[in-house]
Length: 499
Image (tube, rainbow, N blue to C red; front, side, top):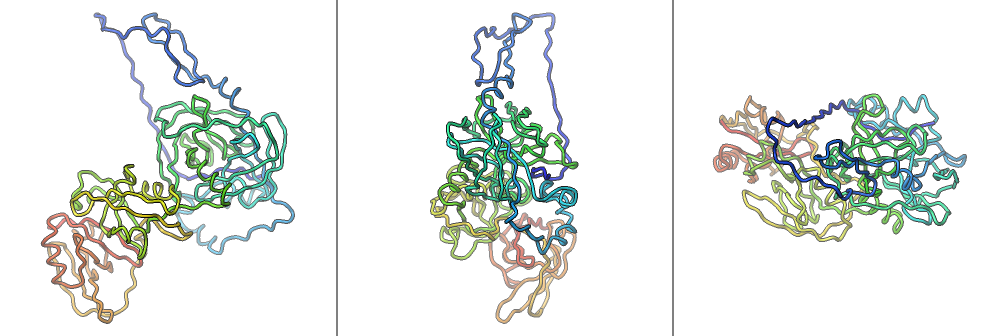
């Protein structure tokens, strides 16, 4: 049987600190004792201090939590029925297995090649949570992917056959339905109110052991993961293992704040780093699946990259924040809003965009036809732009990839040296079109990330296609110069510090 949990291989080291207080010879002023402190959350219990001068402590009461809320958690077993053909391997499966990133970021169960060799691919198991009294259940999409016979076992051992209302692979959320009434539906919380260090607990069926509870704290919020563009994950140190997938993450108010989905691991087992999909994201997806059978996400129509420390200086920012636009798609909402290459988006409807990964989450979380107000940094000035989102297509890219080597047509009509940039540049002709192609890159240019064969498109926000244009743009740009390069079919900015 395949156990089900998405995992990303990565070594992690966590450091913990503790501080102790001691009394000196002279008594320091103390806060007055709190005799009747109100517990924060339903599932906490006050512990009387040994010293009467100390403040009462509050400890999580997980026994009460699992007793009162555990009934909303279900065990899911999914199988491939006899009428469902086995999916063929992807045409590029062999190529993927040779890719070093494939080993780093592969899903352990059920898609890992080792598990496919050792286990039965026709079955899978995971967890879920009841969100309505009439039998609607949330779980992970990868728990039921490719399987058509799904059995749900309740906490009281009743068993039901479930129907998949819909599944969304981008968010890894699936909505199931069983034919039942008066079920113990979970209370839905607000993950935006979670704080790092806050106690949380997971209930599920790790390795098939149902009704298991594990607990820990919120490690961080808003995590972005490789290949997971649209979900701001909640990171915790709650022990999550195969079989926990799709199960709920509870706060101490007994409310579901997340759906457990992934772990970081070298071995496939828990290593102290796990991730949950915020419940507001999951409920939004579930609502769209129930109404439309699919999820529609907003699209702005830009390709972006991260703002590095050097790029922040080149663009005149105080600190490296925001999403740097490297391409604006023709006829896109961004183009109609007047956005340009080199603009840095730092907010969406007033919400700060701290890194490039925040922008796809913010835009993709909104439905098409939504009007958004974007805070933009352009050439040293703050401005606003208003855009109306369109529907995200299946193959839209949102982040820059500058790994492919260039391939040029046309011939060189001359070269020139730019000593202050440590470059030798060739002027390449494609009919009447002229391009500036790097033919030699010295130490200064290489340090900035420039490679032989790169096409220089912009210098300091100015389009260049001739020696005169390049030299004038460098003269006006100052010491720290943002260069827009084309490498193959991809664009990226680099920060060049002139000699």
